[in-house]
Amino acid sequence: MSSIKVLYVEDELFLGKIVKESLESRNYEVVMESDGAKATELFKKSKPDICVLDVMLPNKDGFTIADEIRELDEEVPIIFLTAKVQTEDVVKGFSAGGNDYIRKPFSMEELIVRIQNLLRNKQEGLPRPNNGTAIMGRYNFQMNRQVLSNGKEEKKLSYRESELLKLLYENREKIIDRKDILNLLWGNDSFFNSRNLDVYITKLRGYLKDDPSLEIITIKGIGYRFVAG
Image (tube, rainbow, N blue to C red; front, top):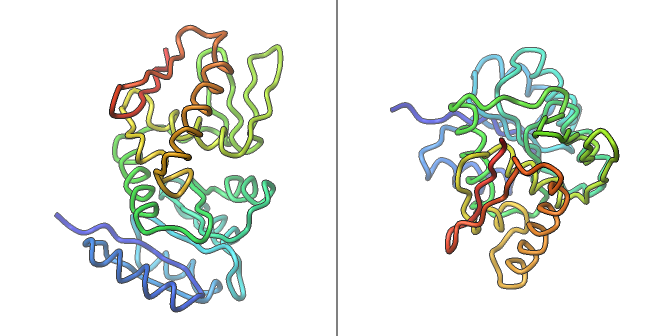
């Protein structure tokens, strides 16, 4: 079985070295570039299975690189890495064709899980939402705007509510481990964060209560399964 090829664009060379070596130790093949202006050409040459792009780069930012990659390949998964925390930056990232967004500092475990999830979704042929919008029963979930609507009213979700719903939707009909959710959305699986997850699950169930075909099922001792219809 051939290794997964990752295009990694990062101008923080010390961080880049750590991430590259960590991925390679897990049998990923990594092609790395620090200059944003050279990233798209490297994408063409290397034909990676997934792209991990820092946002703040010299000469060309990660959002622009993602736009160019999407012109060449509509399906390759793209993960953004950034220290930016503003909601508009998150929206811009998804609008540029990104599939996921990780805030710095991050753990390698978090990055690995997100890479694996995106590659699994691609392999299993789960559809990418059109223009960042997912149809879930009676609801439209506009991921870019973090808005859930049912035709009568709109509910503005918090960033974490939106990310949790997106994760459940993209892995619908599958069991998602609690620890994976906690590591992805909170960065660790501490008791405090675990209780926070319970609160967010309860909130999402409340938001979706008008459509009985949508269920977030608790799998005791393991995690959750999102049933959509």
